[in-house]
Amino acid sequence: MKLLTENERFREYLMGFDEYKLCEEAREYIPTEVKRQSLISCAEYLADFIVDNLNENAVDIEAPESLQQEQVVTFIKSLTRKTVQDFYHAYMESYGVIEDLMILNEHNRLHLLFQLTPHSFEYLELLNKEILN
Image (cartoon, rainbow, N blue to C red; front, side):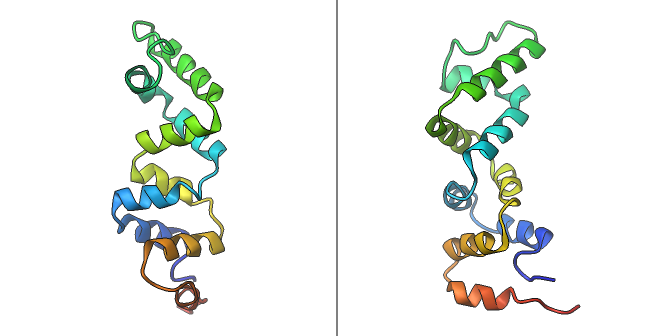
């Protein structure tokens, strides 16, 4: 079992950090397509956010919810990489960001922890060595 990078431990450890700092550091670790898919998975909640913050003509707020969701998905799929990055950063809460960070490999998990803590990368590697139950 790895002390820092095993899935549940990593998730719990990330939940202990300041939400803003975590989301800010995580921006560089989550690929744009993962961010896009996360936003698409939230489509049913995004219509008002898109109209208020991104493009008032992208979604017909008066349309049935199913049509709104289709419009949201189409809109998200059409966004540029930069816009997806900004949209994700503005909308996603730390819990969603943490779930997206679960795709990271061990090295990138340790590197993220290195960015979030005052500890050296070598110290984190040592701390993460395989431990016996």
